[in-house]
Amino acid sequence: MKKNIAIIMGGYSNEYEISLKSGTVVYQSLDKEIYNAFKVHILNDKWVYVDDNENEFLINKNDFSISVNNNKITFDCVFNAIHGTPGEDGYMQAYFELLNIAHTSCGMYQAALTFNKRDCLSVLNPYGIKTAESYYLNFGDIINEKDIINKVGLPCFVKANKAGSSFGITKVYKKEQLKDAINFAFKEDNEIIIEEFLDGTEVSVGVITYKGKTKVLPITEIVSDNDFFDYKAKYIGESQEITPARISKEMTKKVNIIAKQVYEILKMKGFTRSEFIFKNDEPHLLEVNTVPGLTKESILPQQAAAAGISLTELFGNAIEEALK
Image (cartoon, rainbow, N blue to C red; front, side):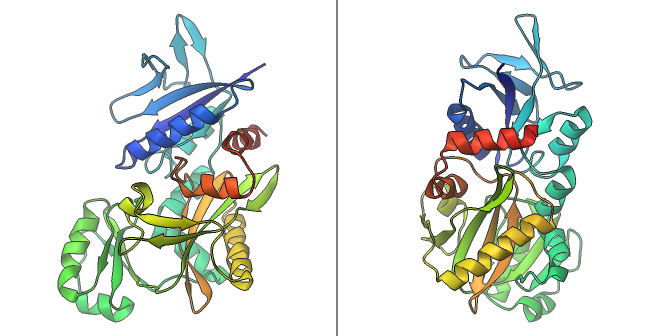
């Protein structure tokens, strides 16, 4: 008997349009001989199932069900394709766990932790995971530019602490640019992280649970046409994403070990994509994404293809792992 799969997409952040694209790719790729797939839009003003004719059916939030032609439909599993809040920060995970509905992403705690760059890096630091030097600010804190520059140097990156797709990020070269960059980041989040600039090769490493085991996918090297790997570089083609990365066997081995270690230390499941920059041939972790992009331009699908895993197999495996 076919299983009913709700593919949740959209969300409440600036990433909702990217999420809608990711969710649509999942919908198009799932094996319809095995699954009944439903596109579910989770938006600020409504939660709705959207059929192929663009008809909308309200989600009953009490049990996450829908009624179509007086037939109640419940779901065996939820495929989470929401980037940002509430799909990547633990809220949807907690909701589905309370309802006892299987879902493809990590647990509530892991989602909340990894979505908070500052807290995630702090948890991993005692395990010897190398990271950039950083300085933290909460909204309302006194901004001491001298202290910031003494800690992280110039140039540096000013980032929203809880945001994805490079929203709220600025590369700062001069002290005079710092306050504007901080104000820009605070438009995205009430916490920001200011990090030293690491001058080295940037790579993205996908790690998934595949057929019951932790699997590190082929590494992608990021070469941005812009000053850094910003939104345009990620989604409008202003970058080169080279898989497998042009790095030595020794560097590949190092980053693979660390990416797998991060996945297992944090007790992850489902998809992750971790970003690293090599400094003196040592990988330094930038962040961990637990609902990475799944569009045709996205990195994780490229990595899966390089590993010989089709999108149909990749997404189907995620569902079957969740149903276990």
